[in-house]
Image (cartoon, rainbow, N blue to C red; front, side, top):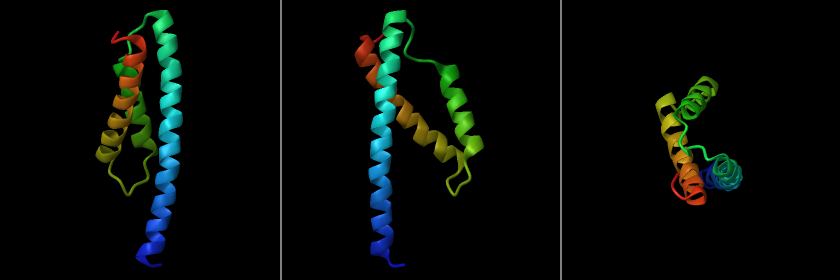
Amino acid sequence: MDIDSIRKQIDQLDDQLLEIFNQRAALALRIGEIKKVQQTAVYDPSREKRIFSRMQQANLGPLENSAIVRLFERVIDESRSLERILTKGK
């Protein structure tokens, strides 16, 4: 395999990640709507810990667990930002 064909595969994966990120964000917005009605806090540290733990347990590499946590911290932070906009900073 040459660099161009590998980069083409990376581009395809990036397209899939973009779609998945947006699907996840849409679901986070739905959760935000429920939290707004229930008047519950956007930030749920125990939920985030469970996500990090689950992802580390499922991680087969080559990324280290610390890298996986950093990636998911960013994804969750962006989802939380969307929820806060929807719930007006609760």
